[in-house]
Image (cartoon, rainbow, N blue to C red; front, side, top):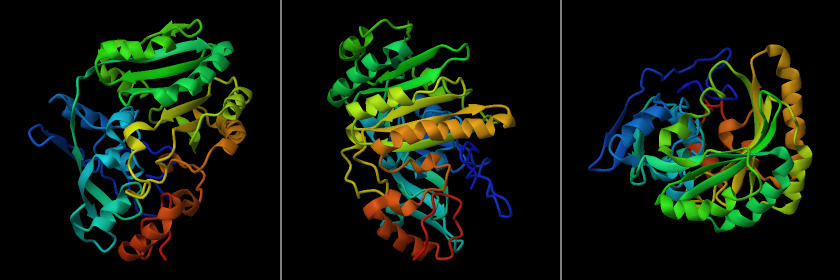
Amino acid sequence: MRGGGHSWPGKSVCDDGIMIDLSLMNTVSADPSARRAHARGGALLNALDTAALEHGLITTAGVVSHTSVGGFTLGGGMGRLNRKYGLAIDNLRSAEIVTADGKVRRISAEQEPELFWAIRGGDGNFGVVTEFEFELHPFDRNVLSGNIVWPIAQARDVLEFYAEWYAGLSDELYVGPAMATMPDGTAIILMEVVYNGDPAVGEREIESLRKLGTPLDDGVKMQDYMVMQTQEDVTFGHGVRSYIKSGMVSEITQGLIDAMLNAYTSDPRLAMFTHTMGGAAKRVGELDTAFPHRNAETMIGVGGGWKDATDDESGIALSREWYSRLEPFMGGYYSNIDFDGAKAAGNYGPAYQRLQAIKTQYDPGNLFRLNSNIVPG
């Protein structure tokens, strides 16, 4: 199934098979009185954000605006507002899905609840979702946000401060570190900051972060939310050759910090980034949805992008080596960026048996298998 064609691992295309292209089904409508948004299966996150913001509303969407709503949501849906409003699946109220038998089904907590449970984190294993209904929340699009950048020489100070600081953060604050090398060769560590609340309160909460070390740049200011939501669109644009490995982390320990510092690879093609969880996303029960990583504090991704096919072998090898140094501190992966076809059973843990039973009921022939595949019983 192809929603926006953003799938890093290439799951929206296949050889010797059929691609169902939803890109013409791309509209999003928002109902401010009901606080609901309806997104078709091929809609992009930019359209979801835009439709909601026109009414002073928002829901959790991802960090690259040309990602499709469909693939993003079915894998769980982590975004810059997930500490305040939960994951995308926590805001999903109903869906329309075409299952392997050709039936069009409207599913929700009341209608076919087992199937509705399964699509909230179970990836594209159960059918083609042609419409999503999301809950919306009041939101001021002018938010305290931006990036703070330090030279890599200050990385230990930044990471050790963050490890002590992050556990006490409010739900309104999303902040997480990344390590990269700029095109001119400057090695950096940065923090992406989004504060969804009273900016005066936010300034006080991030004051100690802004005073840390000697930043190369402090770009945190009041600005339109869409500045942050689109800042990585070019980096992860269509046509960029890329490779990413991800893993979930339950605690940022001193051992993990040491590994981050030791594993850092100075190469403009590569980066290590995090996606902060916790908050509202963590307060949902582990088995209330099929998303298996409610206890994670963050996700770590390692990888990069390049234009030249001759860089494929070295770029992938270096990404894997960097990731391997951090892997002992991880458990499970984010299925939306699973490049290497890791086994789904281990990732879903105690939810897998239930997912397998639902898969057996709705797709016994495993028609929908080009994903983090749940094999029918």
